[in-house]
Length: 245
Image: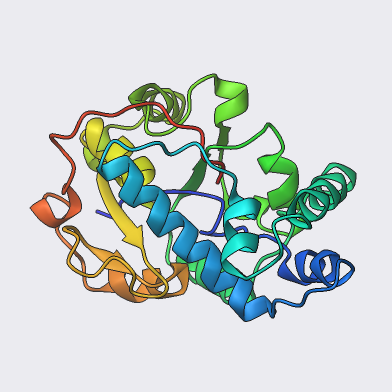
């Protein structure tokens, strides 16, 4: 029986528009190539997960973290962040996706997989998915801001399961933040597959693939969703955090 696929949104099927982010940075006298921005964001998530793992302070700003590590002068950073937030308010920066996301989701849909999204977001993830043409692939879009609970809070997953009429063992959750996505799914008894595009989580327990592009081939192997590799955080305690995505 095919599992029902529950997917994260940010850095899974939706991505920041690195072109716009780069343009704003350039206007302030610096240049960070889009490929470098993408890698830095992955490193931010890895650092965020490390802090969650060690129960350290995890409330820190994405753009400040990236700009600091890219060598932008600290006196310039507040202005860059202010401009980025203004652009995001005008039109969400999360309105970009890759052709391989469309290709993977289309392939999964052709193979008969049913899919929905569970996202820590700000109330606009449905519009963002629609903007990039991904909304038709999903039966439901569960936005934490609208539901009232954020991953890894089990109540967000339980809400989605109730709305969809599913049991945890029927589903596979796929997301990129280990101590948000994998933890939240595992807390309700749901198998989870972790995304690690740059291999930054080597040695961490559990199953992972680089991106959603690899998901159809992974599923073609008919993995046993009862395998412990899908439940590396079954016994971890979930704490509510607010990372968008």
